[in-house]
Length: 247
Ligand SMILES: [Zn+2]
Image (cartoon, rainbow, N blue to C red):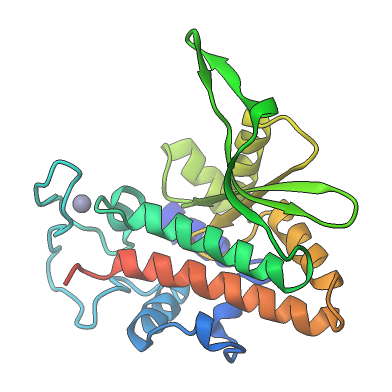
């Protein structure tokens, strides 16, 4: 395996990374058959996981760019281009769907009214003479503390060669790097940098947050499975959507 294939392989490891494979516990988090198939093929390292019929030569990217053109870039069998550079809102909806799910999941036992997309004045910072506001994805209060959850979905294939090599060597490298970047941007103990790799690997803070939510439930073990399954399905739904050719 080359570095990129290895990086994808490692990105699919760790607790909860493959939870979308488990039996659905709730209709809300059921994936469509085709996206489920794509997510399975990608997990197995199959080339062209988003294509029902494997292309013989590389097709071009049919996504529409921000300025309204068809992208036209040559696609690669691992889906690197589609996963990292897909225009047309794929990256944004992949992130926003996870944000919505984190809020939905927190409602179950932790906080009945989490707030989504909140501006946190104490975390604003000056940038080039202007004030850059801090907009955090989900703000949750449990009985004792405030938690500022900020979601980031990262691909182990997005980055320079040394980053990708590191992702090929160590499980969870991309998630760890993303967590560090969030902590540098929002230096507060309340922060939960909820980092997910496209292969499914969850960062340590995301796993700790899931455990916290689950521990508030009557049946923590069952709840933990539910939460992992839900997050994994929402994530893989978004990743698979990007890997499939636009219709
Ligand atoms: Zn493209």
